[in-house]
Length: 457
Ligand SMILES: *[C@@H]1O[C@H](CO)[C@@H](O)[C@H](O)[C@H]1NC(C)=O
Ligand SMILES: *[C@@H]1O[C@H](CO)[C@@H](O)[C@H](O)[C@H]1NC(C)=O
Ligand SMILES: *[C@@H]1O[C@H](CO)[C@@H](O)[C@H](O)[C@H]1NC(C)=O
Ligand SMILES: *[C@@H]1O[C@H](CO)[C@@H](O)[C@H](O)[C@H]1NC(C)=O
Ligand SMILES: *[C@@H]1O[C@H](CO)[C@@H](O)[C@H](O)[C@H]1NC(C)=O
Ligand SMILES: *[C@@H]1O[C@H](CO)[C@@H](O)[C@H](O)[C@H]1NC(C)=O
Ligand SMILES: *[C@@H]1O[C@H](CO)[C@@H](O)[C@H](O)[C@H]1NC(C)=O
Ligand SMILES: *[C@@H]1O[C@H](CO)[C@@H](O)[C@H](O)[C@H]1NC(C)=O
Ligand SMILES: *[C@@H]1O[C@H](CO)[C@@H](O)[C@H](O)[C@H]1NC(C)=O
Ligand SMILES: *[C@@H]1O[C@H](CO)[C@@H](O)[C@H](O)[C@H]1NC(C)=O
Picture 1 (cartoon, rainbow, N blue to C red):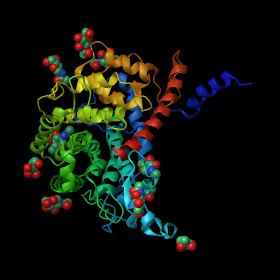
Picture 2 (picture 1 turned 180 degrees about the vertical axis):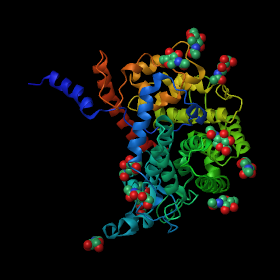
Picture 3 (picture 1 turned 30 degrees about the vertical axis):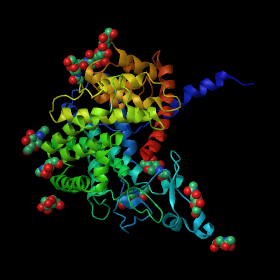
Picture 4 (picture 1 turned 135 degrees about the vertical axis):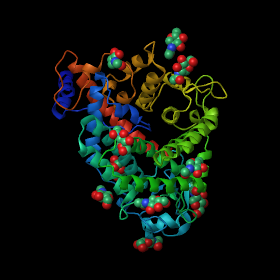
């Protein structure tokens, strides 16, 4: 006979045995203000979130380093140093090219015409994983840089230096500073990148946060040689972004693609020390495409029409918030209250999205945006904290809670799990453990969903 109590036991025991913390999720994007990290003035309510930052730094570092040389498919240029990814919804049609079984996959990629099946991911896209590797590398660099500050251990800054050196600098493993083959079209008329592929490097914003943390604190692993070489690489890449037609087309995109273009262009300009250029970029975004991105009621019309509208609303919110944070860092007049042509702001866009039912899309993609807005505009009515407490009672253990301060922990901080040791057996322990497991599963689903999102945006 089926016994619910047995099931309950499984739920309670698993987290204790494996010491589950908060499962890794790659946030859509963010710019973590190095001034806050370097202040080292962290509220004790952030203890669990600090532990998660360090856990994620360890987990990710164990997978690195990453390099464009890791792929086994050679780009059309013949140069493995060129970054490459494939257009995600693109499928071959070999009907007109004779005996298909005689064609190797490599022959199909160049011989058969490709056509788009919107929303249907061609699974062979996984054969080339520069996108996944860049994303893991940028997260590893961000969490390891912050962990250096939290723990004081140079093991973390050594990781950052190693990962930057392997991906960008070492001549035997470095990526060429271009995206000529990002989200590439295949077939006889293909073999060229598409502008949507520029999105693949949005994580340059996370990398810039990390480098600033090391650079501004004179970290000894971040040598002046590495700094100069990274600045040089980024200068060449900015030049590609600003002169290549793919960069121009992406910059002209009016939806989330344009928002993310400004995330990375601005961050890259900060990285190379072009503060005037970075300020121009943020002004260009908020006086340009931003002005048509939010309706008076907070709806984002250009995202609402997409196949996964809840995801795209969250996704563009993350990019708008990142641009606002970059504006703050650059000392510009705050853009958080900047009103669009139709009368919306970042806050109204968030408030609207909080009223939308996610359906079968992932609800938790919104949570980092809620904390960002709550911390910035303040949360006098407790609306944002209450929403998060109800949605995910481990939120004070999420890394975004660490850098979105001040923000209420809803008195949950004491109950949130950390993986540094066994869970504290308080009256809330059972609940915390179960939610920890639930949160890990949610995080796993988020990861899957974001991996797909990344490839299909
Ligand atoms: C990827 O390439 C780097 C640099 O050569 C290497 O250190 C790393 O082991 C490679 N990773 C895998 C999974 O092959
Ligand atoms: C596949 O190619 C054939 C001709 O080779 C064409 O008739 C057919 O419409 C194509 N199918 C699709 C889905 O493009
Ligand atoms: C198609 O090619 C395969 C592999 O070369 C061969 O075994 C098969 O006989 C060919 N079929 C036809 C109909 O030509
Ligand atoms: C692509 O890379 C990411 C990050 O390393 C990894 O999590 C994912 O499993 C990889 N995908 C495939 C299909 O290898
Ligand atoms: C880092 O070095 C610079 C130049 O020597 C110095 O002006 C600055 O105060 C140092 N910063 C810290 C945080 O030690
Ligand atoms: C960096 O770029 C400058 C200016 O182009 C050049 O003079 C210098 O040699 C480069 N340094 C390195 C380490 O590549
Ligand atoms: C800074 O960026 C602006 C705008 O892209 C550009 O015109 C300028 O040449 C850059 N300055 C330097 C020193 O690279
Ligand atoms: C938005 O505007 C209000 C009213 O002027 C002000 O109190 C608040 O500080 C502003 N918020 C941000 C984040 O700039
Ligand atoms: C708090 O609630 C009041 C009254 O409902 C409302 O006017 C105000 O906009 C709310 N403040 C925030 C920050 O949501
Ligand atoms: C620290 O966090 C707690 C819990 O959210 C809050 O009550 C307190 O005001 C915060 N202290 C500071 C200095 O921000």
